[in-house]
Length: 228
Image (cartoon, rainbow, N blue to C red; front, side, top):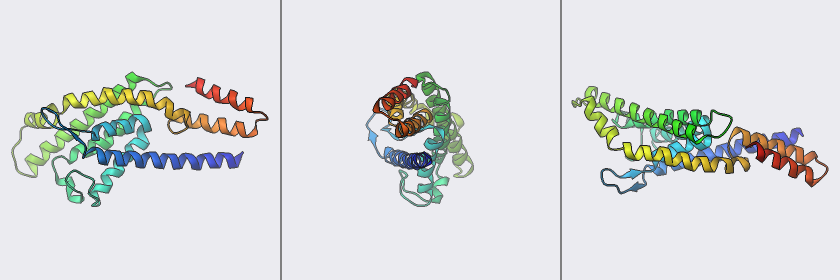
């Protein structure tokens, strides 16, 4: 039984690593996927950040975005304008900081309850949006006025950094919450996501290993699904 638990722990660590790496890649790719729109092009980066928090939770989701940022800062060209440590001097860098914190917050709020809740997911996504936009605008305002020496009112920063993106961002909050709400139960039943799903999968497999008949395994599998 100890060997079975050890294998499951190692398996969970591997799945966590793969899922985190997957969303790190999606966040990086999302910045370069542009959908034409009337005012500004729509990118998928914010959407993937939300999905990382909603599906992976606070820790893994936040880690995925943080790894993406670190990759860019050490010189890997994953940012829209390349990479390197001097990217921190760009007025738009505040949005990247906001994405890491926002993704963590989104996952924390969305997955805080015992039961899955679409309302809580939307709340987490909207909180992430406020954090991303808030830090992004503040950073932009400070960089333009106190580093670049270009006068910019806070109102102008709000318009340039929030207003034109707000309709799209709100849309992503509701849409990604819906996608995650549908996907989380599927991933949990597969033991790929969520505390309850992974724990249930471990308990099910351990009990099936010591069960005397297939019917015992079937009963345990159905019990885990009913808990969802």
